[in-house]
Length: 72
Image (tube, rainbow, N blue to C red; front, side, top):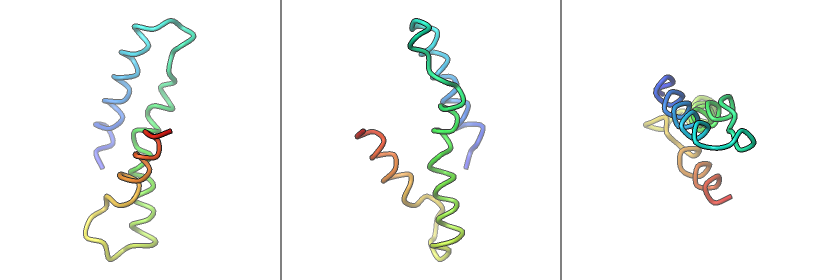
C-alpha cells in the first residue's frame, strides 16, 4: 500500500476541485483521504483474518467496493 501516494493524489484532486467551485460545493479533505485508503484497509483486514492463503493483498475491496461506489 502506497499510503502517501494514494492520499496525496486524492488530496490534490480535492484541492483542484475546491479551487474551481463555489464554497458550498467544496469537498472534505478528510473524506477524500479516507476514501483513497479505504479499499486498502478493507483488503488488509480480509487478507490477514480470512484469506491468509491468498497470493496478493489486493482482494475484494479493490474491485467490488470501488465498482459499487462508482455505481452509486
